[in-house]
Amino acid sequence: MELNIGKRIVELRRENNKTQEQLAVYVGVSVAAVSKWETKQSYPDITLLPKIADFFEVTIDGLLDYTVADNKKKYQELIDSIFEPIMNGDYNTVLPVTFEALKKYPNDFYLLDITASMLWNKAYSSETREQDFKDAIHYYERALKCAETPQNKHRIFGIKKEIAQIYDALGDLDTAIIKLDEINESGTFNVDIAHLKYKKGEKKEAKQLIQERLWGIAFNFYDIAGKLAQWYEEENNLNMALEAQKLHAQFLSAFTHDTPNYADSICCWSYFDTAKYYKKLEKYSEMWESLEKAVYHAVKFDKNPSYNASTIKFMEETSGIMSSSSSTPFCCDVLNNIKNSFGEFSENERYVALCNNLESVI
Image (cartoon, rainbow, N blue to C red; front, side, top):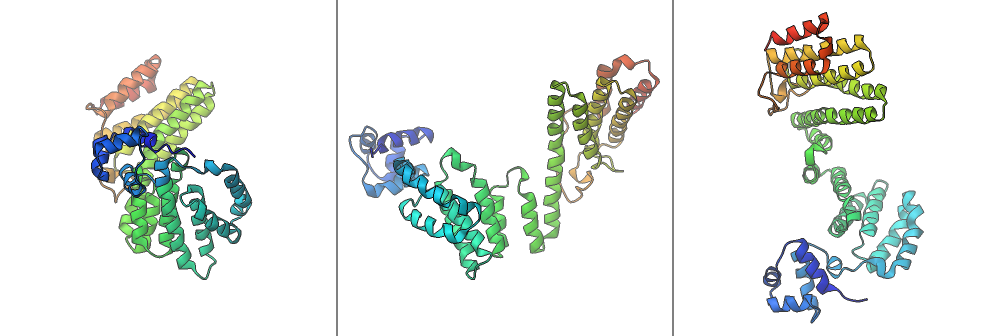
């Protein structure tokens, strides 16, 4: 096998925006030595490999650009031999094979991932439950250190969540929460963290996390339903476009109550968009009903506007301020949009009543 470590160092330096000088200082060699490595005039001493790998935050296999492709046929035969037992959760068959294989392929992501998964499965019916759980964490953490290739990186979040679940099974709730916090982008794992906090007796914090996650779903649902409705419309399927938009309006209306809140403003636009679809379908009775609901929420909001998250229904434990995209009264924007989208009905009594209602609070 040809050793391309010089070329690999060049690639890693460029990917990480590092200089030869920085690598030389970190490893403790001269710049000239690094230059010789990169031009294949010499190779780094084997004792320097861990430090070079650490500098680029890769494994030694990653530094040497070594993969199991060098022995691909035997490796594939090995994987094929345990595929069915893996699918059946047969850890008694799989684990002896993966333990032996890891002696030859100690940094193979797939083998480490499977070994950890099988140990986790085994723990629930094993007399060595606690040790199996700990061993599963050990192999998962080894796998994370090898998850450098694009095809492996999609598993990182899954593995970290599974590590948290194992700590939960071990009764170490604090560590489980820490592990989930590390990957809790945009509140994705709020529900899981809330479950752990509830088990710890931190019920108020758990409830707040659930509320924040629920509102995040509701807030993003506007774009999701709107995009889906748009695509249905492009396919000339106005009935499904309408159904998608109605779904959002009905969902958001559940977050409104007697106290005006930010959900009223979003709900207004959702009913407004629903009315536009009814118009295209020439269902005018339903169109007016949707417009009336839109105006109702707009007027209600502008009479006593609140951007506090805690005023939204189900969100009483949360904090923070919802931002406004306009400096003008909300009803002004709604009135202008009604005139632009439904101006042909300007002589209609219901149209006039809606406009007057909006103008009364501007």
